[in-house]
Length: 87
Image 1 (cartoon, helix red, strand yellow):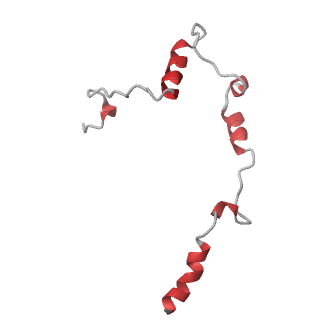
Image 2 (cartoon, one colour):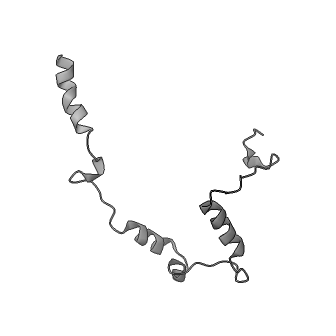
Image 3 (cartoon, rainbow, N blue to C red):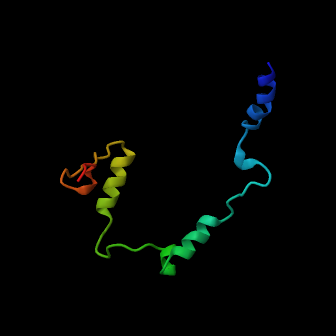
């Protein structure tokens, strides 16, 4: 019984969102600041870059398959060092 009484404050402290406690760090624009810092070319923050000859057909088809829950299964090259086999 004594152990339960001693453990009760710990159990109650575990309730609630720890990120909402006063004094806890809160993210305030850090993602935007990080992107601006990391972007070598500042226009990449506003507009990305890619193949200038692409019309987006392949990309759009992939997104369409994903939205229709018909995404293609990923394949693994067994000769690749990324296949998980030891060397």
